[in-house]
Figure 1 (cartoon, rainbow, N blue to C red):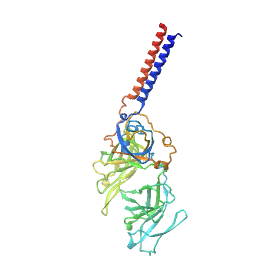
Figure 2 (figure 1 turned 135 degrees about the vertical axis):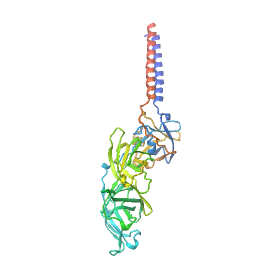
Figure 3 (figure 1 turned 180 degrees about the vertical axis):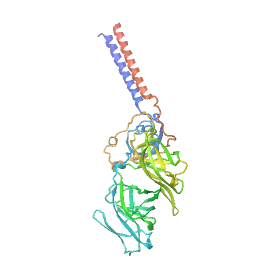
Length: 460
């Protein structure tokens, strides 16, 4: 090969290398995630020790996603650079994964003239805290005692308590309200709120409400004190449902409007399909009683599937509202809900009530790099996920270590989509088109240089 041919070959190699570098830079610029690629942006505030920060994604924010697996969520710094992140998607705690645990219960008596006082008891228990016997602290003669409530021994359950399932003797019908308190030593009690159960004969059927939602915390003992001791029922069964280790709490949506399909039948369309675990109906009209059956489906083309049946009500007793407005769901992915109400109980009104729903919370952890402030972006139907495994993002991650990470919060509340998301035909993916265009032009340009070099060599 003569000197000119060698020179041309070297020039070709240099040009190809320069073009290759420009091509790689163009491809990198095209592939990099940019804030403008997303529909919604919300600034974040951070606190605590970095460089890692934890953010619980509100359900209202997730409803703005274009992908149900949240592949289209990113965190950017002030310079528009995407931050490394990991997602902990809330997995539903399905009914088949839960087994109610039966616990012992002991009656709590007071003297009839001190029926509203806190019961004073003496107990006998084993070395591990299991109760053997519970007796009034003072002697109460027969005929003077009144059943004030019940003490439940939950010491065998080493997990957060989610639900209490009660059963009682059949002679007591109506609504029963009670306070719920928890303790680990039987001396110091913390209030966990109010509970209520119901048993009614309705239209030749027995309608029951036996499940009570608890605080989702652990306790060795529970105390149920009836608001009206003279009507306290005699328990025949007490069972508890607890959370699996590592299960995130429930996250509730804002209320959404529904439609009346026909009298007594209400339908709600969710913005996106979600694995629902609970729903709450906004019962605004006093003295409403509505035995109902709940159905769900993934989309309008699928058949309705039975989810649950139960009793919804808002009744006034002794000047206070007694409310049962929630129903359990098994965690299946649905986007439409339908409630059929037996209107012989009064129904829920002519207009469809608003509905809220709950799924397991989702947590995002990101590694803060570059200049703050940081912002969260969401909403892109075609982008691929970029999340890392949590153990990769946070080396040596443990439940205890995660609690020490810094925290992040949204500076503004996300807006819920006004109308349900409609699956539209996907538009052109300009990023992909740009990548292929650069590649094709690069091949053409390299071919042109090769042909030019070959002609010059032949001419020589």
